[in-house]
Length: 401
Image (cartoon, rainbow, N blue to C red):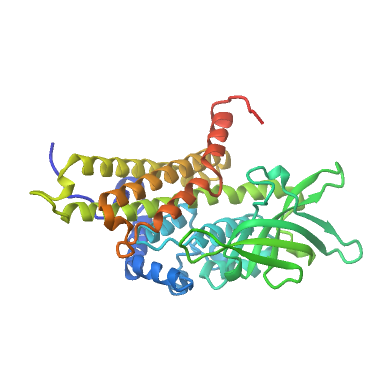
């Protein structure tokens, strides 16, 4: 069997087979941008309690943050496929930008698809160039993965037509650095009396909107917050799109969220694997470098295979979504998120194991990824809930709940 040189960018696709020339060029350009910053920049910013403002601003200026948003509002006119490429490559360079999952992917997609013309004009240009950021609040202390138990409610003020929003959210990323937060609430259906989901844009400085930092054992620039909303008064146009289309709008944002989480996980996994492969090629204890021993080489090869397989599923999900197949994309996006989360956790763990004691040092910067990689298993939906989805929706098995 002919031999080939080892990959310098593990899990990167073969452009001629899987990507257009434009997508391959985007991947190359973003990889170059990420390399100019690198893991050292990311860890330094995190340790100093700062944000990745320089990288975010440059990525926005180059058009990478809004590559999926409509051109008429300052975006690139492409799709989630291209946005996932951006996040994956920045992650592979050691600089995963968590808020990319939220601001342009979830919030930007929902507003671009369902927002009024005025809402698109107001919010999309800033989301596209990175000058504005939008957080996303859906999870509640007592709701978790059960969206039907969301208790954040909105009611109309009969005198003014304003909305009054009351409730709590937890694990909301980046509220302190976001200009606004897209909140998932529920309104009462006048015809049935039942509560239905709706989405509202809430500016950070709105009276009654309070946020509190949740300390996390997670090394990331973006912090996590609990939100408390006490009769937050919002104008009528804070409601995104059509009040009767809330559920459709919500799911339109959740598929990109899962695809982008897969990209986030793949980037981390590729970065960790690259570090481990480089170390295994040069670390010499006996006659040959440690990478010559199958006990080291085979687990790294397995990690590479699993990252490649997850990457294929992620690209399938992105292509289905960009083609307008929301149902097909839902299944593939869940599978992609599951596969990428599992692959990332294993790749990071094997990287630490390959480096031994060095894998736990600050110098090599891999140990801090152990918790970050596990986040991709848990959020935005646990692997168990994904298995539930696949067993019910794909296999037709009965529900236990």
